[in-house]
Each structure stands twice: as structure tokens, then as C-alpha cells.
Length: 439
Image 1 (cartoon, rainbow, N blue to C red):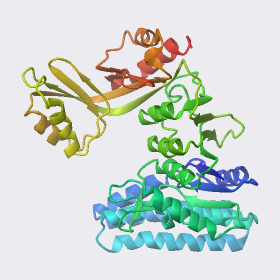
Image 2: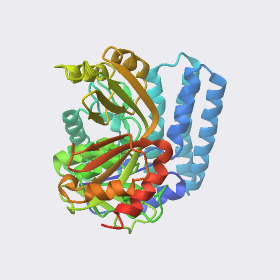
Image 3: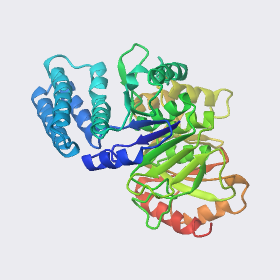
Image 4: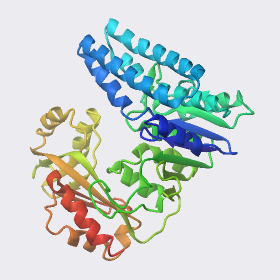
């Protein structure tokens, strides 16, 4: 069994869907996980925002505009009048469902149902296309087996049990289509795995099916050694370990959802990152093995807030750090980086929703300083701490860049540096010139 996940760009038009159909045909049992068509989730978010604002007229206008876009896709995707009629009938059902949300009070539970429409549409339209071309396949509703628990964590046992139950209904079928991103919660309501969750869906499904391989198909040929949107002359990395890939994904490499590595790692399932635009490209393989002894890649995570707590009196006191961490725990705010000195603790967060409340609590322990518009630059490799000269090459490359914080030695796979966001482009460029030319 193989799991093939295709992102929004990969199914972003009728032509792209046709290309995907040619990529998935195989003699091996395969589950294809699809995202919503590119731009759809953003449109659905806008519709939900207008509904929350009770701007029903604007919400209806956005719904109609999205419906028109999908009518054009249907016209370009199918050749027979029968399938066009069937697909347009499906669109009518979904968009009448969306319009119904403009008739009553809009809640967060209804918002999740709105956001689910993108994946429901893309998979149904794709299944119709396969049927039109006599390609045997079955559409598996993800809402029948994908579930999160009361802590909003995937219920792995439930997913495995119910996925196998769904597959067993079709013993003679080798090709299955299902939705990424969407699921049910502990109360049976429609929910989701948050942004980027289709990667997570693919990995969870791969683990549940004991797949031989998970393929993540996007519009770039693997994970690059630096951000190709910013830095020239980047290149795809052939091999990464699970830990290296997780670090890069968490610290800004957009090609892969950070949570998607763990289920594959737990079942030791290789993950391949491939390019639908260049399917012959080798891409990146993520597995338990990796080429060791070298720096692999750089990633950058924006939207970081740095917080410093200064207290000469309290810092050395027993339980001080625990008290600080408990503040962030109470407000469910994860910490990215932390450094300590004799008189201060500095740490970073990427979610400032409760920043004012957190700062108010922390002032009980000492003077608090907050710096916004920060970026974490993460340099990833294998056994960096043990490799002589790795740190020197990094800091030499960044000698002209002011460094706000440094985290080194907490992981054998990365060195993290906090800088002002305005210095990000220069920092990534200098690192590309300074460390990869020496590898």
C-alpha cells in the first residue's frame, strides 16, 4: 500500500487534476489524499469571516463567486454531458449548503463545516473524472474514519480500525480517493487538522494502513537547502532523517506540515517529497537513515515574539523556571526557544494571542521586555554539536547580523538563532553563501 497526497496547487485546475490522474495509476494498492483546490480554503475562510460579522450579503456574493469558479472547472474537466450534469448537480448541493449558513446564526461548529467543503468538492470532482475515464476507484469519506480526541489529537486506534473497515468493503479495488485535512472531533462534529493538515492526514492514514511509502506531491521538487523564494541557487536535499525533516518543517520549511513526520517515524515509513510539475525529479526521501556529518539546510520562521524576564532576586530561586513555564502552560502557548543567564530568562513564542495576559503574569517575577517582529533561523544537519567547525562556519557567515538569541546543543540536529525579521533575507543569503559552499 502506498499513500499519495496531492496539495492544493497540484489539483488547482482541471489540467492539474488530469495530470494527477496520470500519476496515480499503478498496480499497487494506493490511497490518494487530496487537498482542496488552491485558493478554495482561503475563499471559505473569507466566507466564514463575513458570516461571523453577520454580513450575509457579502457572504452570499463570495459564495456565488466561488460557485462560478467551480462551474468553469467542471466545464474544462469533463468531456461528456452526463458527467458535466452530475458534477454541476454536486456543485449545486454544496453551494446551497453553504448558502444555508447565511440564513441563521453562525457558530464556530458551522465554520468547520464550511471549511470542509473544499476537500469534499475536490475529491468528488476527481472521482467523477476517474469514472468518466473508466479508472476503477472508490471514494472513501474521511469523515468515516478520521477522528481527533477531546485534546484535538488524532485518535490513532480509531483511525486504524475504521480505515481498515472501510477498505474491507472493497476487497477487489486497488485505488482509493479520500480527503485530507477534515475529520470528526470527539463529539462527532465535522472538524479539521488545522492548516496544512492534508500532509498530516496522509501520514496518519499511512501509519493506520501500515503503508510501504508515503508520497507528498507539491509544486516544488523536494525540500530545499534554503528558501528558494528568497535565496538564489538553492537545491533539493536528496535524503533527510525524520528528525532533520521535523526540525525544518517546524522552523519554516513550507513544503511539509510539521506534525506529519511523527506518525511516519513511529511506523518507520519512508516519506518522499515529490513535484507534480516535474514528476521525474528525484525529490527528497525522509527516513530513519540520513547522510551524516554535514549541514543540510536552513529554514526561517517568522512571526516570532521574544520575551525576556529579568530578576536577579528570583532567578536563582528554587522553582522559578517552573513558575515561568506554568504561565505559558495556563495560556496554552508553546515556547520555541529558551536561553538563560544568571539574571534573566529569554524565550520566544509564535502565538501572541494571550501575550498581554502572559506579560501581566510574568511581571510578578521581574522586569519583562517584549520584542516583536522576530525571526528564528534554524540551521539543520546531523550531529552538528559534535562536528568541529560547524558553529564557526555559521557564525562567521552571520558576523554582520545582530543575533538576539542563540540555541545550541539542545538538539543534535539544529542550531537556532533569533534575529530581527528585517535581517532575514540577508541572513539566509549569507548562510547559503557561507556554509553550503563549504559542504
